[in-house]
Image (cartoon, rainbow, N blue to C red):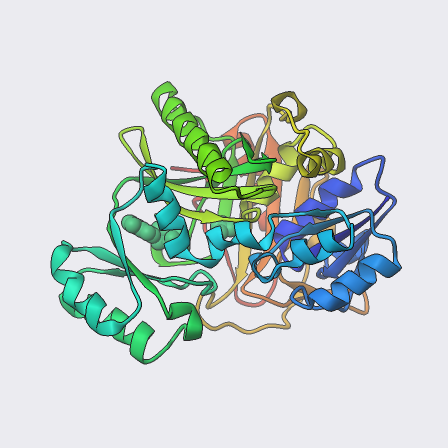
Length: 415
Ligand code: AMP
Ligand code: GLY
């Protein structure tokens, strides 16, 4: 079987790595892939957003399964385009991808189906939004409705900051058309957690939990990033599990009542206080770096799992996990999530232990050498008998890898 994986990051490297284990998979193409995926895939020079070109490639090369990593092509309707040509593709269609494309769409859905979430109002112009600030207490959260590369959320401590945020979005258009609608919502406190669910014919199958580390500095300090470390599994209390189950049921009910036909991954971001979860956001794709720790723990054939999901035939027994803990530390370019340099030579990748996997987030290969090519560069990923063991192994291997201005958190998995 021939598989096409769309995307360039560590998430896509991890998906391709797991697909490569499948006895059914003979060949993997990546669009575009990275320095790491070149080892076992054929990297294609096709932009993940160029749906026409991807479609043509899949038709001409008789691709048996296409797996879409990032949200952009999903929101643009890549799944609908592939389905029209009877090409098998993993991911939600355009109507369902609105759960990531529009925060207002998601908030309306959550409200309609009584799913716990922060109180909110949405606005289409500056004046209305400004006039309503008095209805909120501080801190509050201002969110641009659309896709803003994870930067569309502004937490405001007082009215001055809120007005500044509204001006930047509505007047200065810092997010362009993605900020034409703004959601203002109540600030929630608690512990953040995310659950990735496989969704097969509107039925949710939560995967084991992974804990992301979003802030750039140790102790969860500094600006938010895409995620710079993670581990799995994460234990949950009985009460929390019961409350999460109730939310999954309500989501399923809502999908059916709205006559949506969801297939793929639904990534649910929660804020949890005293075992009571509230939904912060939905994403319509695998998480990065969550996927880097879930794939090594997955104890079934990913190709079969994705096919069953698409066919609407997935059952709980189809998803099995290894008992081991998996932890990943992301090595970043110094300066990330602000500005950083690219093109630094990476050394030591050939020294890594056998029980450690290095997924590439942003690298390039040239004449057999590896170079940095992004803010997040490498995910050093180890399986261990418990969290301490996995952490020790991952950090031991991080020390072997060198590039100029490399930065990583020292406290992944210590909380
Ligand atoms: P989102 O893109 O909606 O996940 O928001 C990005 C980050 O902003 C989240 O991971 C939270 O850390 C924070 N955030 C978003 N909404 C809220 C909220 N209502 N209360 C507190 N923090 C929030
Ligand atoms: N790690 C968070 C995300 O993928 O959105």
